[in-house]
Length: 278
Image (cartoon, rainbow, N blue to C red; front, side, top):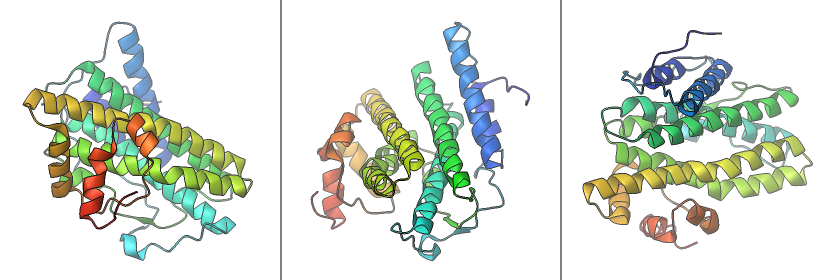
């Protein structure tokens, strides 16, 4: 279908420089499969080195707006639920790029192959999530790009481009952890509306996102141990420096703990933002 890159970093850049959303996710899954097949055969693809783009290639649509300018969704209506599926698809497509970016951008940091296993698997699952949601949109006579989306998701990657620990703190441990909080109510809403395909897609996403947050917490702890840093204090300092939003309850304490994020990670930040306790 397309030439196979000769290193994992080159695979990452191949995904990042592909504009079409479906082609991007197909490449993500194909490169992940090639990586794990090589690992299973005892002939792992070299990690290599590559220069990722400052911003990933994107399709011409959706129109990207400032968050305040994105039309409000009204989930009680069929149109509102469709808009919500589009918004989640946008998040998942950005996540594909975010996770391949972490693979390519930090190759100068010596890391075990298990690190790459975790992020390749995560990028593969994010691609699957986008495809599931795109199928839901097509079943509703829609498609990804049919509605505006916000343009802020890549800011976390730009802000943390020079700091692997900051990237782990902000992307999986804050942004993806938020998905653990908000997905169960979405599942309940689509179940109440009798939209089983959306329920199935969101339940798959919910189950697998726990692992994505866990990968962030695992490798954040690994890097803290290497540097002799206190884990929670370092996380708080990086979050204050690089995260530009507020941590708001309610928090899914059980799933966050399952992913390696007990309340001591997020409650102090929530209190500082004036959000109070869960």
